[in-house]
Each structure stands twice: as C-alpha cells, then as structure tokens.
Amino acid sequence: MTSRRKFQEQFIQNMLKNHKSDSERPCHFSALEITSLLELFNKFSGTAGHKHRLERVRFRDELHKSFQITDDFLMDRIFRAFDKGSKGYLRPEDFICGLSTLLVGNLEDQMKYCFQVYDLNSDGYISREEMFHLLKSTLVKQSTEEDPDEGVKDLVETALKKLDCDHDGRVSYPDFKQAVTQDTLMLECLGTCLPNDKSKKAFLQLIRGEGGCEMWQR
Image (cartoon, rainbow, N blue to C red; front, side, top):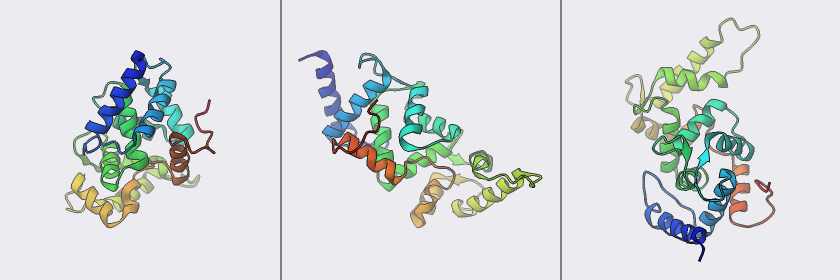
C-alpha cells in the first residue's frame, strides 16, 4: 500500500470517528464523499497530497466559481471560518468540515457558521458597526442619493430589531439562534455565505459520482 493510499484511508477513518458527532466541527459526509473531497482538495492544493494545504487565493477562486459567492469581503470571512486555528491556509479537515456545514449541515451547524462569519472581531457579539460593514455592499446606491450611508444605517436598525432579542444593543449567539429559529430567513440576513440550492445540488452530484455535473472538471 502506498503512503498516499494509507494516509487517505487513515484520514477517512479519522473523519468518520472524530468528526461525525463533533458539535464544534462536524462532518456529515459519507466515506465515499470524503474520498471525493480529499481528491478535490489535492487537486486544488497543487501539491499532489504531500503538503496538504490549500491557499486562500485558490479557495476563494473555487468558492466563487462553484457557489456563485461573489462578495470579496464575505469570501474572506468564509475562509476564516473554515481556517480553524487561523493558520492562513486550509488543511484537508478544514476544507471537508467546512463544506459539510455549507452543503449538508443542519440548522444548528449553519447558525454557528453564519454567526462566526458575521462576528468580525470574534468577540462573541455582532455590533452595529459590524452590521454596517456587512450590509453596506448590499444597498443599491442611487445616483440621486446624497448620503447612501444613511440607507445602510436604516438597514442596520431594521436588522437589529429582528436579531437583538434581549435588547442590549448588540447580537449574541443566543440572540441570533432565537431569531433564526423563529424565522429561518434571518440566517443570511447580513450577507450571503451559503451556496444556493442549485449549486449545492450540483456539487453533491459531483462528489457522489452521480454524473451530469461538470463542475470542477478542469
């Protein structure tokens, strides 16, 4: 058995054993899906599986091409959410566990992930200032509008009313969870950081070998 094949089998067993029920870093993929994802990771990393690291630029490129997530700031935040330990690159387990949340994660998984993306300074709260930064790019600026920031501020106040369940002027994770549980549309109210249904279906077809999908066949 080659060292690469041995690593792959050990890696898959580790993912199935240690991450299947890990509440902080879950992996809900099957062994077949993990195998496909590991092959994709090796292809993206360009290291033939020797260094096992995926750089930020390539990750962002694939995120944009495959999931139509286009906001540069949000793509950077998604990378940071995937990058456990803030290494500046992704290991195979970062890549696979992150995609598990995006593609097959339950609502709790996705709430934790979205909150992490939105909590820009990682202090456990989403502040007005963070909301302003996140929502600024979503407002269509009218040529006749003298101060577009005023429109953003209105959006922030609207979002805060929906999310700040304990009315303390900021959004904690319990606030966010309560708001999303009551209305799942609030999950991505501060920016798109999950793939749409069409992209999700196409990607899952690819890693399950179901055919009819040419994504990432480059």
